[in-house]
Image (cartoon, rainbow, N blue to C red; front, top):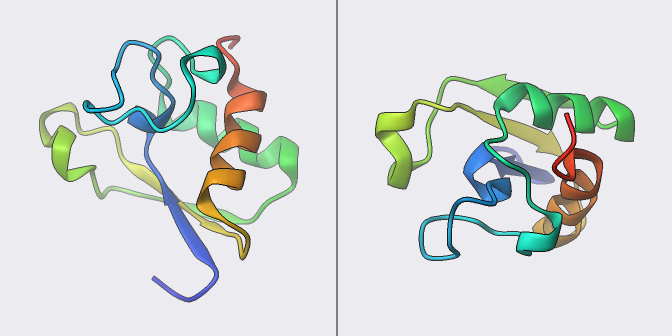
Length: 91
């Protein structure tokens, strides 16, 4: 991973998960069963460059949900909030 890149997994935005299970955004911003395509659509709307990869969150290997690597130099928390606002439980 290059400097200025952030990794996002669908589990970060999943309303069904607790923080301990991998959710990283407030439940109020999380979505029901988000998938990689939801994150990609949100990133497209934000006009951000990214690439999808077949790597999986170590805590969720069985789910095989993939990840996206986003070009982003600000905090990961700021990126997750922006993406979560675009996913926002509506698909």
